[in-house]
Length: 95
Length: 86
Image (tube, rainbow over all chains, first blue to last red; front, side, top):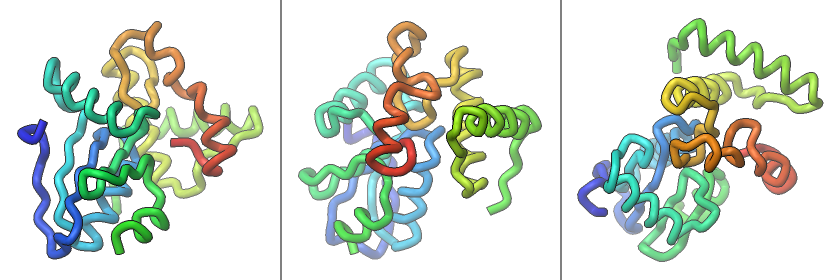
């Protein structure tokens, strides 16, 4: 799973952030814009751009973390899951 | 952000806007966001042959994906809960 994640460098490293996203999804783009705009370090993957077993493996992980299977799914510190993008919720959890 | 969208995407936006309004729904007035979503719908239409929700992951099989083809089964519940669909 780890090998499919792209790494984005940033100044804010206090949380370990993992973003499951789709390349077609506007809310996923907003989530990335929020993380980039606030200089967070994070890892992300566009699940729709993976193929075959890789896609299956990562999507299983999304379903395990977020049974509603909505995107974006942000995992904070391997524990808290924020489904969908809502700026207030992101701010509350991360800022 | 000045993004260029194809004429097909712009036409689809107009068509969806008309359809939404005729059923009493409204597209997001943030046109930049909406155009990105419409572009995603268009790309999924090309990719799968049906307009899968750009924010959901499909199986690539129309029958299995029926619930997440736009407008999806979860739209009204999302509108109820979030005032917008995801």
